[in-house]
Image: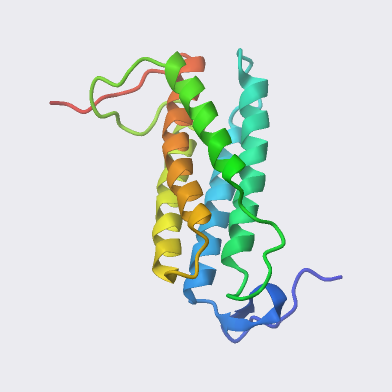
Length: 182
């Protein structure tokens, strides 16, 4: 099977179950932004390949589940109203984010002021992923009432999680966080 189909050459794409919509459709914008965030997470994690530190294995395992859950979010967003979603976001996905967020947040120094996104390339990449997830959340909200509320909750919690994860990775790799000049 070839990777290209040529069916999108005129500016349309298929949702799950084959419904054709414009590539600027709000659903396409939302799940495409989730895909962008997922790719940025992958890029951020790739910067850990040559790093050895305590907690690395856990970080990679947690992010494997998160990247999978982001595909589930995409499935929810790309399924037309009234059709069955094959891969659903579950309350457990949100609970796991909260549990790991709380665990990692306890290990890092408390915030004294606003910090500038940056640090280790992996941490900096997760800060970028956080902003992309915030955009995905706004795009999902724009779809309206047809979006599973769990999707919105997951995206909201994921952006918080990515902030803490970026700080946690910077902390684990002993990379300084820069605060705002007052």
